[in-house]
Amino acid sequence: MTLRTEPVVVSIGPHHPSTHGVFRMRLTFDGENIIDAEPVIGYLHRGTEKLAEERQYTQVITLTDRLDYVSSMTSNQAFVLSCEKLIGLEVPDRGMYLRVIASELQRIVSHLIGVGFFLQELGGFGGTALMYAFRERERILDLFEMLCGARITVSYSRIGGVFADAPADFWPALRRVLDDMPGYTDELEALVFESEIVQSRTKGVSPIDPVLAVNASLTGPVLRASGVAWDWRKAAPYDVYDRVDFDVPVGANGDNYDRFWVRIQEVRQSLRIVEQCIEQIEPGPVRATDAMLFRPPPGDSYVPTESPKGELGFYLVSDGSIAPYRCHVRAPSFINLSLFKEMLVGWKLADAIVSLGSLDFNMGEVDR
Amino acid sequence: MYGLGVLKGFGVTLKNFVRKPFTVQYPEERSVQHPRFRGQEFVWYEDRCTGCASCAKYCPLGIIRIVTDPDGGHEQEGGDYKVEVFDIDQGRCMYCGLCVEACPYDALHMGSTFEGATTRREDLVITMEVLNERPKHPSTWFRPQLEQQAVDPFGGAPVDSGDAGREAYRWHPKRSEDAPGGAGK
Ligand code: SF4
Ligand code: SF4
Image (cartoon, rainbow over all chains, first blue to last red; front, side, top):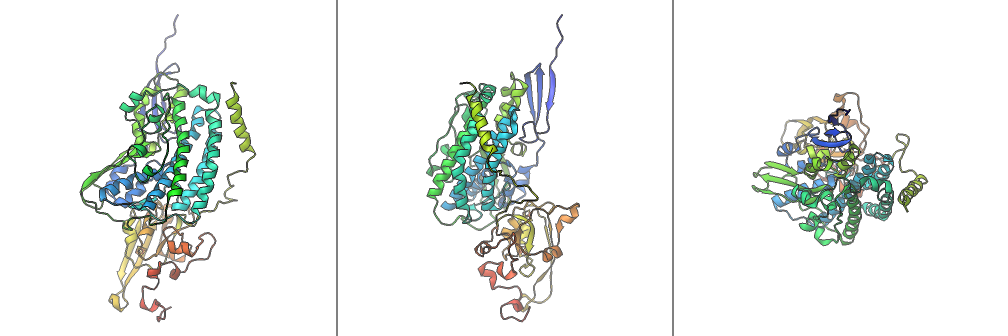
């Protein structure tokens, strides 16, 4: 006698299945194997693009803080870069350096959270690595507080530079963080990446083929884990990325392990970039203009930037008025989710959460 | 050897076990914010404010409500706009600071606290009276003149309205009798 079996549809969410935001997965199981997967998004939709059309360019900076709320600095930067291109503003050197320092610190924060949650998602000794990562993150957020008075919703960049120069006590504090970070990174690597348990759980799981990754427009660490060395900071350097030297770490297999491994390597490269910026930065103005109101000439602009999640860009259309006529956000988290089904089908439930986490998406950005 | 990596991981955990704790036990202990901290308790100087409403225009959410009334008389004879209502709806405020950045007369400053929870939404709307009564502990955010004076919003002395402005505006008082050597105050 054979037992009659049938596929079971399980709805996971809409809470935080892997604490990346309010996300729902509809998975169809045959036993414990996933045979179909469907992402259900939109729970965090706030209409950012529409709201941007009703706000002056400077005011939209505050909205970009809330797109990817674990990396507001890079969102700020991407938006003002697009505005500057639209208006035709030249940014003073010091402003660009400060923006790059802030963005690279933000990249470290974002990747620390990504890697910290990795163990949480594996379901094992969850809190430990996460809390270590949060401790390091806390120190960088303190630096942001010195720079701009806020820790998460920074609104640091302004069209034409940054809102003000760093206070005098910022530089020694940054030095202390930079001195401690490599040690912390080593610790995290020893704890997470050298553990055989983690390796056996994640190596070879949900690999993404490089050709598929490129065809699906994946960007950021997810693409680089598949072995494609594509980084907008190298491909089309913005701000001062053409004046600093850094490597683009790439993975070999594109599996869950590689996707996290690439992130921790990028933390080291970001530290290198910040070190070089500190050496190169000269005193001077940080802002091209004190103006807050702009009337860009009619036209459009798009500047691709490398956010911690991938290619982030703001497509702005101006009709010559004080607010954008259209503002489209090319959100990397959203596009990286497009291979969701291909990644999950054929794997088990326990792997699904890790695979999802390895995309390191942020629902604030996916739903906008 | 298999398992070496796991042991190494335990080594890291052990190292952190004996490390000094990084966390503080709020509310008994508190971490100190930077003077640039963009906090609640906006600081507003009525005598500096001209009622120009730049702050209201630059607020991305439009939550500052200002009603002014010309109190008669020509500007050059000492007449001006009297600010009658100055409300900030903090229930919707995101503490972005654009209003402070926009204020050309340094009348509005970010505050320093973060514990302004109330039980009713309406209590979050801060009015002119509340703003006037508050001790003036402005944040140094976007106020280089306060940074130069090393103003400490946490426990330092309150800042007088005369010291809150940029040099260019310091001797540009709102009413002629407030000027140094003037008749008022
Ligand atoms: S801090 Fe921002 S949201 Fe709050 S009142 Fe000022 S401009 Fe508006
Ligand atoms: S607070 Fe400043 S910007 Fe607002 S009305 Fe008064 S002077 Fe104008």
